[in-house]
Image (tube, rainbow, N blue to C red; front, side, top):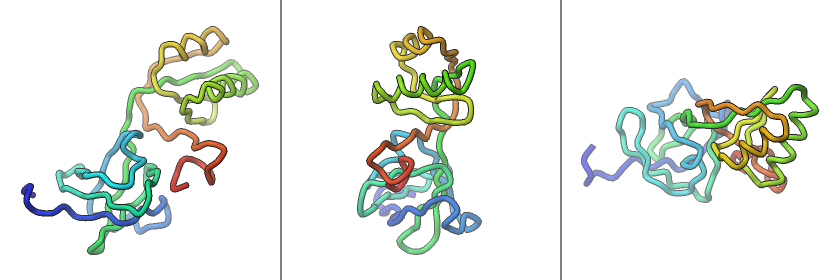
Length: 156
């Protein structure tokens, strides 16, 4: 595609499971920071330019679909990124660690048996001091949205 040809426009975001994923014409792989947008130029994994042009900023998650203005779909894929996996000896300790992470307003993904946060040496040291095991991992990141959103940080 040349620079003088306008990109395909993605005009709506649809949650995973609510769009025909088997009809995806392509895929866009994005880290967390690029998955909460209203308008941005994206490039699909095969090099096609797409203009994300939504009515309002939307948090996209892995498996969501972008509806194209002329028909068709682009799949959203969460890119693996460097994270810290935080574990504890038991669920009560993990809940206490989650409280400390939340008290510092650190974006956090809560999964069975572990917390995922962005690399932060100060937070990592604090968590280790509280008894956590902290290790580097690479994984997609989809943190919780917060108390004033409708559910997880996803189309809220």
